[in-house]
Image (cartoon, rainbow, N blue to C red; front, side):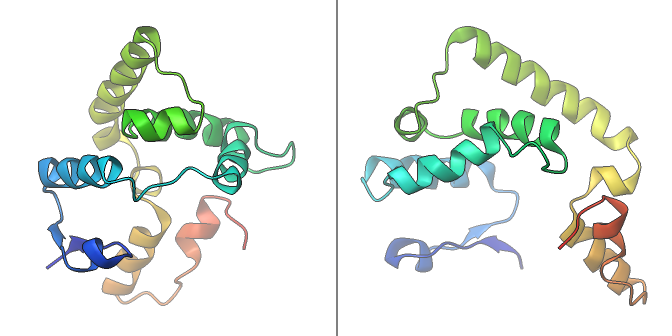
Length: 142
């Protein structure tokens, strides 16, 4: 049975079932209200790498787009801690992007539809031992 796990006393005592989006949203909102989440200068520095990746970073345009979507899903207090304004235009753009992704995702080939760790798991389940093939097919170098 899958679940979402976190680190910390409250998160370790609570397991959320995979697919239980309302429970996950409630958990994140509760955690944000509890002041357990701190946006530090170090966290802002790391976040900056997503919004302005180094010029030679692979998938640079994708990182910027994913960062905007990811930060848009954070609770408002946490998002503001990162200095990421979220006005009505950006909210509408994010909703439209997520709707388009939900519509287009089933039409994409598996190598674009699923993240590399899941592709590796699928490959192992089929008896293939090329665990790094999905990662390489996406151009990810370690």
